[in-house]
Image 1 (cartoon, rainbow, N blue to C red):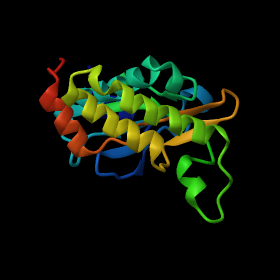
Image 2 (cartoon, helix red, strand yellow):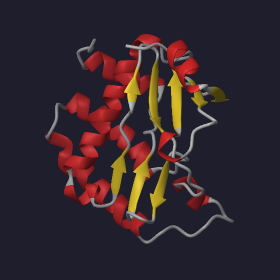
Image 3 (cartoon, helix red, strand yellow):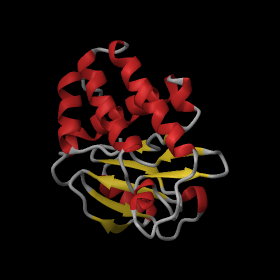
Image 4 (spheres, helix red, strand yellow):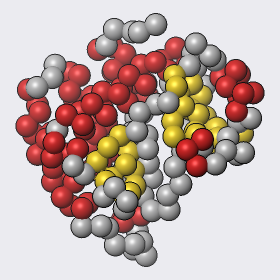
Length: 186
């Protein structure tokens, strides 16, 4: 398993921005599908929880995919690589995210936004008993933040008619709660 310094030198990463969940880096020389963002866990989420963070993203993606009504309107990108102290994700280029629809001068939302949010709300209500309630609570909290609330991490892909969650809105409390509920993986 690589650590951040290994991937930094291999991809020629440059710092993009700092966040409470870790510093983001990008590979400026890459194009298209080779473009990635690397989250280095160097702040409120400690490095040893990188695999827990990635596992939570996988649980959120599974939750979305498991419900046909939600999967019709949304998908969650899964990590491309998980290291000792980092997670790599795709870095697509998009100009309008769901937080743009709340701006007074922002673009109008696509009609699918209301349909997607209705499907997510119905699934949250329906799925309440399907998983261990504690695990489901954490997953639904992240799903709600990522698909029902405005965020710069979710955009509408017109080619696929899907809302794409580039990276779920996960905070340090979500990661700690998930770590307490899930066995750690090597």
